[in-house]
Image 1 (cartoon, rainbow, N blue to C red):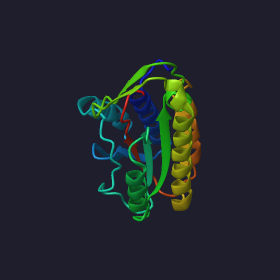
Image 2 (cartoon, one colour):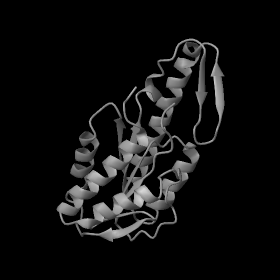
Image 3 (cartoon, rainbow, N blue to C red):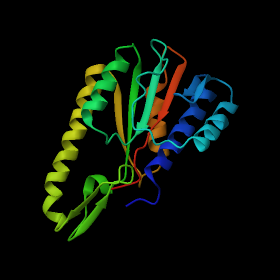
Length: 202
């Protein structure tokens, strides 16, 4: 239902937030790709790194060399198994890392507007599902998405992280400004951004 892909929006959010934070004197990096830096050219370096290494990894960066009390901004759709996300968040938070989840979704993934025979494909795993009458599974699908959102909120609340949901039919500056507001006033200048979008749509 949106003109842009989720992964493209995740990249825009990540780079824009990096730029704002560096302008404010923060040291920012990309997990596994770019060490934290306060240099203005770090944003350009991040863009080049992303272009060279497409962001298709679904896993949260549990093995990254975080320093205690740094901030992690994780940008993705978080549609991988919830048990994996919950375990990863608990592990990262256990290392005294504070964080923020920015969940990027196409509105179709929550509204499920399909009617009649509909074929669904998973572009990352090659899975295929055919619904004879898609509207008959809409309520169950929406209930599962609501449950997923509730569980994510529960785990982020438990570890003291923040969470926001961004739909790709909305302006990118909304999550960027929201995340920047949440980060301003933090005591540690080392901020990491983890751009992670696992799919392009339903």
